[in-house]
Figure 1 (spheres, helix red, strand yellow):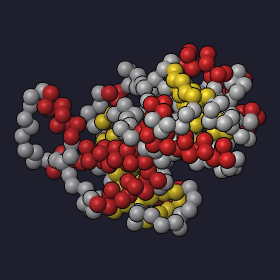
Figure 2: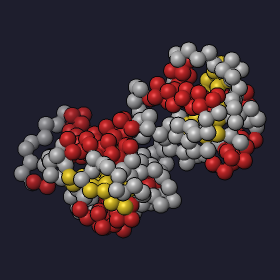
Figure 3: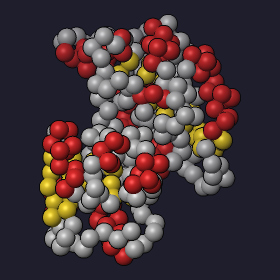
Figure 4: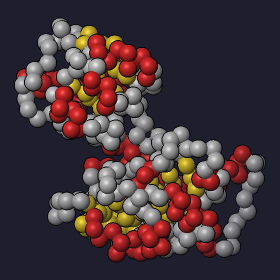
Length: 323
């Protein structure tokens, strides 16, 4: 499948905040582009585009009216919103933006681990109250060190492996799990099959999720998993909210079955005002900002340009190809 030439191509960029169009236009390709900031505008104009660059606005039923569409470049690394079978039926190619926020997400995950260890959310709350906390005699309530602690990374892909490298810089012991390629080189001290997770959980001081959301990872960390963790352990989720059973998480935090949780993703986003995660003192919530970086748009634009060049050349394999 060949795209129209650069002079005849039209690309639609659809996102309420990201400025990928500006980053792509700065490359000087000469391709005609337009941008929409609302779903209604996106849905009404998708029929004008040969290529769509999108994430949250995507709806599979729009394939029926997108008669010119040849290629969708997802802005996000996650592709749960796309139906590959429908894309194949309509002859539309699809690629993800996997890897664009590898540094940002792994940085964020390490930041949440540090925030838990150094009790930074509590310090910020105390600052707002102008309260200078006195020294603590209870050892279990003091800030802690990371050296010698064990981090269990669930999903040792590009993000997880970079996180392993960061954790090693803090002199942590690092265990990782993968669905495949268990024997492949990694920055983790140990690499295990994903199926070994139940036996690994009791060893962890910090469990960090960097895995994709799949049928195998949905509700992966549930009441059974929490029961295997040490009361002194922490959970950090920079994967997808649905990888954690939120009711079980709230229960574990309320009962102090685990020491705390750093949560960047939740099942419902934005997080409902009624959620107990807002007010639990041992929960630290960031609003799915783990992948946010000032380089994001440039990184996506680079993948988009590479894929356009491949499609123009008739190259069958795209960067981060899904369909």
